[in-house]
Length: 422
Image (cartoon, rainbow, N blue to C red):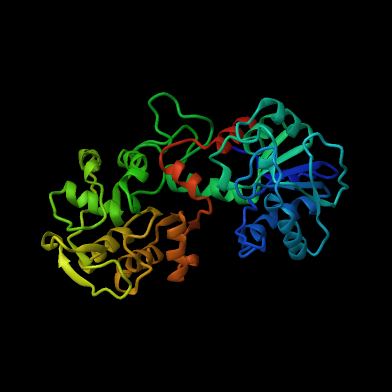
């Protein structure tokens, strides 16, 4: 996987005295009064910033916050609370600069400034060439360190990477690229050639890439097949095992001829589910259909849970989890895997009576010797609930970007950084 790392730029001494532009992800949650309620993303941005300071650079940092209207500033769109919190964490004053696109401001070596919400800039979302040119002129080195935006070709995520003298990956983005490359055999050396899938088939990898360790097992769960259909279709061409859960599993149960009562499902996508099952079977792989399930008569934390064989679901049942027999069989498969990709809990793990399936899956991944990568908000919540953070090979922080990689897409940030490194 060939891309320039900011750590290498700094280690070479080249960054000393240079103007560094860091695109961070500081899109933190706030309450109605504008107070930051959770600062993980701010804390995660500090290593790249500190790396630039230690290298003797003049440091500019920007991010989006919320969904502002381009060219229309509102107080709630301001990064002022972020500047204050970043300053507190780094124990230094952080100047907030508005109207920065045309330059006209100075930054001293060793200083850090925060550039106001980048999505206020006209042309940011559509990556207008004139904006990209101005962004590139602001710096000597562009550092992309916001994986959560890696799937967007915007001014501060893509345009500047094309126009800045040097473009490289910050420590957060580089870690994501390394982990995804290891799990899926990606090289990020540019778009795939015609007929070549970005994930690589069971016996192939892209030129210069590293094959993922087999068997490669993917867990894709969630409420609807429709939201993850392209992911399922892509993975069906490449993985050795495809575990489905949640409402997605219910649709696959319908495709297998089973009744699911009044459970969440998408009957109109049964044909697509059958096609995924057949695509896997054609390669000698499988989509395991639940053998037993945990049902209730109502969607409630205090609803009575009943374990039933998959072919005994009543018309008024809601399937809210996989059963213990199914969970045990899936756990055995995961413990034999070489690589595991996990996106989504397999049941309503928020309710104690319906958490066993997800808990067993999480524990199996923790105990497996496989390299594992997990992504998605609910997945991260499950990992945190069961205390498995240290046992997962890599936890991806970018929901949308992570899903697009699973869809087989080449992320714009990965593509442009690899191209600039050539």
